[in-house]
Length: 71
Image 1 (tube, helix red, strand yellow):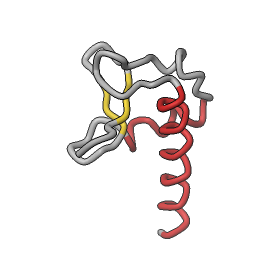
Image 2: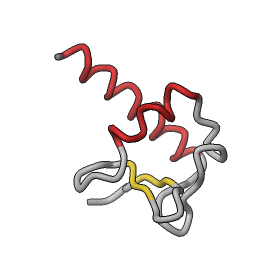
Image 3: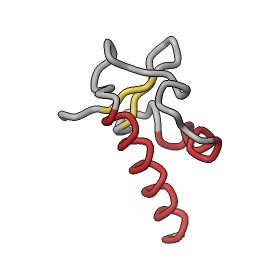
């Protein structure tokens, strides 16, 4: 179980870093997975780390993504 949580953490960190590099920090600044230059492995993990109530990576209705920087 710990191994899986480590993988999720690593994927979340990689995706978060790419979104922050593009300043995707709000719905207005949200970017697509193509804009963020995510690889296939990162895209496959998206459903596990986006959109939930407590998720840091959020998804817009038009399938763009951004990072919450404040809580």
